[in-house]
Every structure is written in structure tokens, then in C-alpha cells.
Length: 213
Ligand code: SAH
Image (tube, rainbow, N blue to C red; front, top):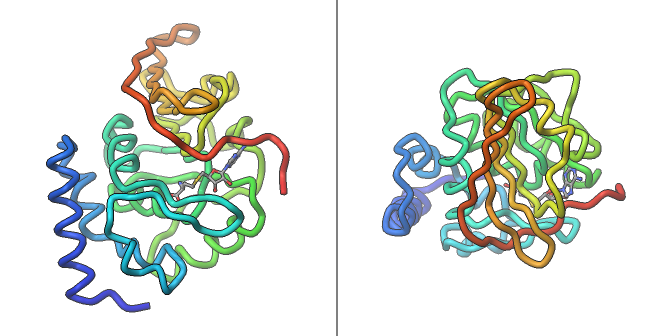
């Protein structure tokens, strides 16, 4: 599991592309500059790791496009020591971005194969989430709630109520909502019962699913 000067050079180029596309949060850019994304993909696909594209991982899932990871993370507005819940651990790349930003990360994945693989892999390269669950992300992880932020990394057909209820007051849910394609949506909990909603353009994610594999 090597990270070479060449990889670092490719990452610097990727960061420049993300800046050109409008990403501004320095902490997000620094995280992407540091994380060896090629290690999150099967070897053999290394040369694709630093293109700004989504890519297939195991179990018919994808590692999100770097721009999408950066955009969602910027919307989440992560501060050090905040408790963040991620729905859809997948390759663990988004998890690593949040950990680089010194968040306390809780993450849940419904595909057993991916859950097992990523649970072993992340600590090997020095990333330690607070908690990793195998289960249904529609329900969140109630035992560790409330969270400062919740990020959903699969396309949600609707906004799950359980996730809204697991936010702190002032906390944010960043969620791509839709079936064919998704509208990036941010819901901020303003009071116990009130949420402010903003939308940020169209994206395309793998679907958030209910049945477990
Ligand atoms: N954050 C990941 C993105 C993976 S793609 C990364 O950086 O690589 C979305 C992930 O969401 C897939 O791994 C998929 O299996 C998972 N997923 C889909 N529906 C889910 C659900 N209901 N609960 C938890 N995870 C889910």
C-alpha cells in the first residue's frame, strides 16, 4: 500500500480542479490533498483514482466523485470534534475526509461485504472512526445521537424522519433527494420541531436501498 510522489502530484492536480469547480473550504481541500484515494479502490484502477470521477467498488457500489465528496462535506460545514454520522460507508473515502477534518465519525453501511472490508481497511491506513455499523441507514444510529451533522452518500427517495430526529438543534442533514437523479438538500434543525431547507443542484448517486444484502 504505497503512496508515492507521483500520487501526491496527481492529488495536487485534483485539488486544483476542485478549486476551479468552486470548492472553497480549505479544510476539505487539505483533506483531499492528504488522503491516498488510490488505496480505496481495487489495485489496477490506480490510474483512475485522481480523476474527478466516481468509480466502481465492491457490491455494485461506487466511490463517490471527489467533487461530490468535497461539495457535500463543504455543505456539512464540519468543525473539529463535531459528531458526524455518515450513511453509506462504502469504500470509507468520505469517512476518511471527515476524520482528516478531526470530526468524530459514526458510519453505517448496509452491504455486509463492504462493511467488513472497510472496517478492516480504514485502521490499516490510520483512520479510526468512533463507530462503524452494519445496518439500515434509514434509521440512523440512535444510540449515539444527537449529531452535529449527518451526511447521506446514497440517493434517498425521501428524507428519513429518523435522521432529522437525530440532529442536534443547529445540526445539518446533507442528503441527495430523488430517485433517477437527486437534488442536494440541506436541512438545518432550527428548533425541536423546525427545519430550514435549502437545495443545491442536481447530482447522481447510487440508490439508498431498504433491503439488506
Ligand atoms: N461514502 C461512500 C459512498 C459509497 S456509495 C464512499 O466514500 O465510498 C453509497 C453507499 O451507500 C454504498 O456503499 C451503499 O451500499 C450504501 N447504502 C445504500 N443504502 C443504504 C442504507 N439504507 N443504509 C446504509 N448504507 C446504504
